[in-house]
Amino acid sequence: MKYKSQKVAYWFFALSMALFALQLVYGFIMGFAHAGFDGLHSIIPFNTAKAVHLNLLVVWLLSGFMGAAYYIIPEESQTELTSVKLAYVQLISLALVGVAAIIGFHFNIWEGRKFLEIPRGLDYLVVANVLLFLGIILTTLYKGKRRTTTSLVLVMGLFFAALLYLPGMLPFDSQVTDSFFRWWVVHLWVEGVWELIMGGILSFLLIKLTGVDREVIEKWLYIIVGLTFLSGVLGTGHHYYYIGVNKIWLVVGGIFSALEPLAFLAMALFAVNMYRKGEKKHPNKIALYWTLGAAIVSFVGAGLLGFAHALPQTNLYTHGTLVTAMHAHLAFWGAYAMIVMAIISYALPNMTGRKFNDTNIGRMAFWFSNIGMIGMTVAFGVAGVAQVYLERVMKMPFMEVQKEVEVHFIVLILCATLFVSGIVMYMIEFFRHGRPTDEALVKN
Amino acid sequence: MLSKKQARTFFLGGTLVTFLAFIALTIYSFSGSQDQTNHENITEAVIRGKHLWETNNCMGCHTLLGEGGYYAPELTKVIDRQGEGYIKAVLMSPVPWAPNGRKMVAYGFSKEEAQDMVDFFKWIGEIDLNGFGEVVGVDRTRSSLSE
Ligand code: HEM
Ligand code: HEM
Ligand SMILES: [Fe+2]
Image (cartoon, rainbow over all chains, first blue to last red; front, top):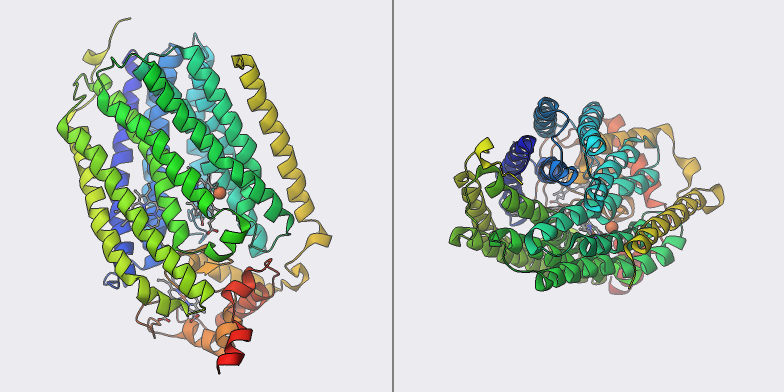
């Protein structure tokens, strides 16, 4: 760590981990409900569990991204953050808004649109919070000595992510129009601007961990984010096939979805190549695992499994089934959860001065969680394909099909247990690092 | 190989072009002649139904137009499949509806609310979904042969 104000990042990471843990609890509630054990129904019905699972996911990832920005931006622009005090205000208000939303979901207070359940009143607070965050980051960048491509791409991603929250707040009378613009948020986030955030963090980590020349890495960064937007913006069409808008999207969505895996492939190749080119001298092996892991698993989860149901001919049958849940888990895990865990693994030793860089428990955390998540993906996938065949092709009634696939949720719960044991180990390492301290400052 | 400056031009240029194309296609999709939703049939009742759908987060369990939770039946063609009376019974039930063992929230809707919800589902059921309606709807060719 080179700047005192980078320590703020620690608390965003800590918030992130706490919300992540809670997200998993609600995942289990849903897993059990699918397996036939819905004992909590009267207190936490499935729709509450799902809204909490999704919103906690989004908030913990955002908190992780913000922590990443508070860590990376001072270092890249070679200056302290403009205001540490305001950063703490922003942290606490983020936590309060998140928690208020989650509590509301238990009392039937929500907007009832998947991923955008946060009620309107709180939406405004989210906007205010994000504006404060952007204010701190942009002024820091502005007064900084250096404006690197890495920091520009990261900040651009964060800025457009904030901007794209707005179409989700437009009111419409038509369910179709509503759904159309819901995707401007959900799709253009995960297959657009969030990839810029991921790319920025990835580039920062590769520069630090591999020692490859910044110019080389940042050139690739432009190509990757270029491919992302080139394919991802019109790729939104893959959500417009069957929601009641015209057929032109079948063509546009199909073509550009086929290009989307390229951006993820480029990301994976880029990370692996930089690693091979590099000096392999950096002691933080755990951070390297997560960094390369993110680039590779996101290609599988988003690129391959996304494309697997993205052509109109396939999506006609898989649309809105457990096949989607299969893809959603591995994609979110690989691309966004893992990149947040990578930057945390990199930054923690630097902020706390404790170098648990290559521990057994740290490595086990990586493998357990990844193998567990792959198992979960397979379980969702098998259930999903069976559902598509029985319900959509054989025309069996929905509830009968659900009974047929119940057993796969037992498998899901077993794999999730392995996954969670990995996450617990990760969190043990997190706590073992202790608090950030000024003694960890290094002169350069 | 590309220089860094060329790579940046690729990024900015590609983004601008696809973004403009996306806006143009969006405007085209919502032009009156392209409407597949019978927009003129969105009555006050349909809007109230949509409001009930949202404020109760039905989408957290059910899918509609293929979007939502994968825990409870797809509802796009529910009017066709189950009929109005059945749906009203589900919505007005004072105890969790669960003939197949999986529980729905007991909403205990009033008659008027149940009617609004039904009107909403009727409007949804008539949208032209480019073929998806047939996939999640009643298969008339098959049932007429087997019964
Ligand atoms: C990191 C990147 C990605 C993430 C986090 C992600 C996540 C998700 C999520 C959460 C959904 C469900 C959304 C909802 O129903 O509200 C979804 C749906 C979908 N995704 Fe992705 N995705 C990613 C990349 C991709 C890519 C690259 C493709 C295609 C090449 C793709 C194709 C699809 C399709 C076709 C659906 C709709 C499924 C349906 O019809 O039910 N995704 N994705
Ligand atoms: C303990 C581990 C977990 C379990 C048991 C679990 C289980 C589930 C279940 C049962 C669903 C609901 C599917 C439905 O609507 O019927 C779901 C949805 C979802 N989960 Fe998880 N989950 C876990 C961890 C995670 C993690 C770590 C992530 C992200 C990295 C994640 C992301 C999602 C997403 C994006 C959805 C929405 C999918 C969609 O609606 O298309 N989950 N999860
Ligand atoms: Fe998408």
